[in-house]
Image (cartoon, rainbow, N blue to C red; front, top):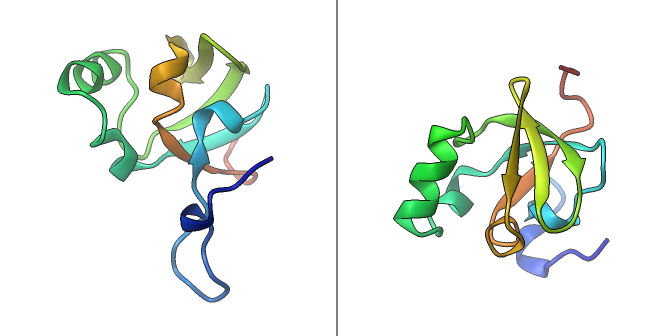
Length: 98
């Protein structure tokens, strides 16, 4: 897995590591990073919200790649690769299973 230097927190920092959604593996759980959603086009943000993908929501990866399919609150959502690569997430090993 490749991490961009600016997305990895320093030891003792309150920041958590953030990685592109496209770097998660099937079955991996994560939390959406609210800041990264603001960088998307307004139309993309509206569509994601309409499908249940919002700031700080927890999800599981069902299919990696393009399209990237995630499960949010028992609903599967497909994201094209260009959108998925712009969305930063915080991997969450301790997230409760759905």
